[in-house]
Image (cartoon, rainbow, N blue to C red; front, side, top):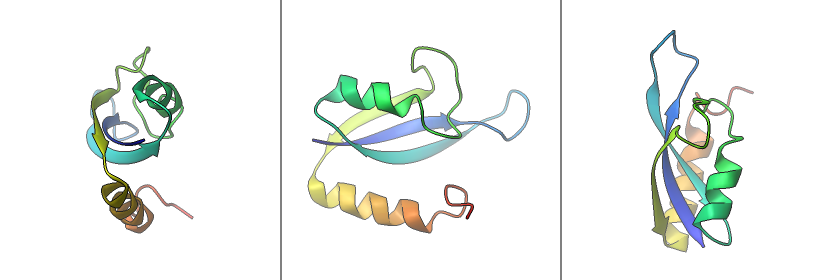
Length: 78
């Protein structure tokens, strides 16, 4: 199953955040939520509260989203 997550990103100043969209693959929604709390740049609010929205998506949407992630300079600092 494939999921689209809207997450609250940090490291932009005290009390400030931005929304980032990430794409995950997992067995179920709880597995994805558990894995997402270890994502870099996610606000660590405890118990996954930095995740604002989770939606199940198709494989095509997932692949399109992963391509967009690769082009995002903020997610890829190498």
